[in-house]
Image (tube, rainbow, N blue to C red):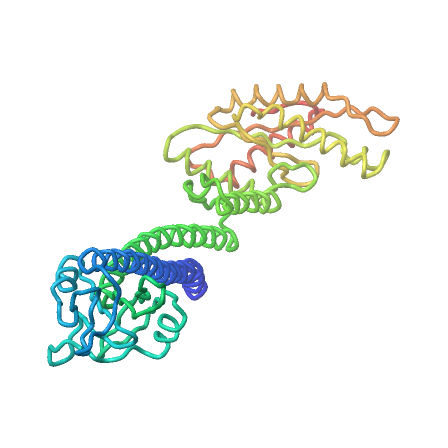
Length: 425
């Protein structure tokens, strides 16, 4: 049983946890990718806008077209800008972005430094950038741009002269490490939230899994008791109050118990207690009487001339008679003052709880009158039935056997004295 319980607990836990873990990982991965893509889109837009601002700034500060003078220096209009880093350095300080001005595909002005902290002017742009921007006249954005060992998000846009010819390029870039750091911070927050949610979900999972397994264990224990013959076993009340399939299963186990109890304790024909279960109930009542000093009495009865019904009308008629007599007992004891037992054949034992011998005798007479008044139909026949009872009260020195023997002796007296009566002494 422990192996089954452990296996069920493990299976239910895994059925809950594995999807939760997969869900948490999926959400984290997709959220991270979506976040990264979103931030890259924002970076691209920010670099583009900054590039336009820088070009406008250069146009305001230096009017005219880009060209190289006779000394080989880059000019814009009448201004030599070859070594004027003031504008781009100020912009980098304000924006945190690196800026490079290309003439053709050659870096002229730049805020980017090499490993020796020297500006990397005089170097060349990658072929793909030259092809797209210089030759094609298009903007170009790269997410995987490597410049002297550093990864950049870089945006290139053509620098045009007044005749719309492409004189060079403007590069605006941001180191990926900064963006990656922001992404990592947010991803860590997402992971933390996912972890907290996973822990909370796991706690609920453990709680509900434990609840289900414990409920099933209670049902198994209940069924184990029933299977070993304990038909008085009690099912857990909390289990029966559940409004789910587990609660329904618990209520069904009670139905099984009642059905088994009925099969074992009840007589199949009359639905009265059979002799075996009736004897057990008498012994329980005896124990209660000893503990509480509360009286009880019995009446052992026999249907008069029962053999005649079987001989004259057949055994089916005898069964009808037994059923109708049993129905009279059920009606009389409907108030819960006692019960009837089919003691054997046409013999019945009535139990009167809390009544002394005299009170039980009066009750037995009422039962007898009810039976006399009962008209039993069988086919075209209408049959009348009488019974003879012997009444006895339980005494302190009695055993159940002695009590039944005393009632049986009085029943015999009633039979000998004409039947259809109740004998008390």
